[in-house]
Length: 286
Image 1: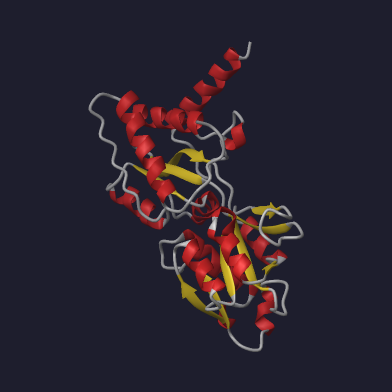
Image 2: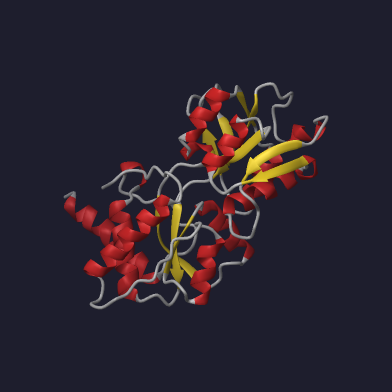
């Protein structure tokens, strides 16, 4: 199985975790028990790594991991690999809203209701949204209706409960139905938001015109791509190697031989596992 992973909610975290357990049981050291708990894919996962409750965690988006690493919050954690998937933090509004950028919401005559995940110390999307709105200068103008699931946020926008939805809409099939129920426009993130994130390791992603319903121009946004597979530095070398090789072989970026960039330094044994695969591919091509 190769190609870019197309997510359908938190079930993907479960699917990746099940595959990892099966592979380590099949190829890892005899008797190895791999502890993975499927949570929300945010800071709940890293907290379990730090506490020793789990051995491997799957966290998304990878850009948030990179940013937290810049802050020094993930010392002692390393990566085993990345599962590639497309994602972007999209701000969509009712087409009748008299604003074209997120920062212009500050001039709205009344408070704007935004459907988005909560910045609750776990959700990395919620963390990014709240931080971006603060940088844009509109956080005080916003009333939030929170939900972790993009489908529910889309429903709240479609029903009129929210004026704006901000979520990873690229990987949300429910967004098509929401955009059909209510005419939409896409709000651009201001340069100071994109630059502010980029300066701390969170890159910009350009969503091409036509990639989303009614998107008629390229849209720069915050990248919300990829699942990062993390562990502590003391993970058994054989487990790290098997896991890294499995990830590199199974979840290749866009069907190419290269995996998506890692947001953290690789576990040393994982790095060797990736290097072995590159060597194998090179020798096999001769």
